Length: 342
Image (cartoon, rainbow, N blue to C red; front, side):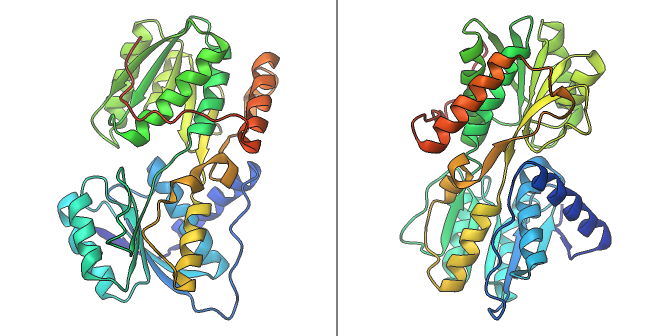
């Protein structure tokens, strides 16, 4: 599928503003504005899925926010096929863009080859691999939101009655695996005997398949679902059980279903890149740390309609662990191995 390039439109602007309003509710401060007399950076986003998709939406919202502040001029291409990705990267690089953001998970080698051809352009791409000092204009990031995922697991462990939790993921890659493991660790803090059903649907965006997978888990005794993909919360809603969200907050869409969500805030990651590009010091850096809770890169969403319905024991533990994560006395393990059913 050919890439679809988008510029700002009223509908996209509305999407941004509503999303930023939600971010404000969870205490996410917008990135600080850069000097007003500084040149606006030209930033391009390249995404293999629609910008409404969970993971990509967080990058898109952060970029839109930076544009609203006047720090950047932002253009993006969505639904870019992997085969087209290097070509689209080259087109933006040839077009005079200062910073190109997106995802390199399926095109690692090709993306790095493009970056090597354009040493004057900064590339910040989601990647399962580390940066290479020999390619100084290619930095990597990932959604290291294991801190918030761990906290959401504590809530899940307190809310399940059957002690059977279903977990539906896209692919068993590090950025998915580490969040699942953190969630499972949090749930086991509340109940060491909890059992997990784990499955991957082999797609980043296939709500019907995710939904069917979730149905099977419910049939097998799960009374709470970890919704790493779209479609899982729909299954939970239809079957009258609970769900935990991932990356975005869908509580308002599923007020009787989604108890809590681990949120990813891409703003610290992007703001650091903008500052580095503007200062002329952008380098082959691993931006993963900017997704940590201590850096403002993740948080636990408000409980919304579940305020007052979560056991106090769980709330107390969430508060305790949150404080310890922030002061460094507690560290959530980063486990990138594929999680298994128990």
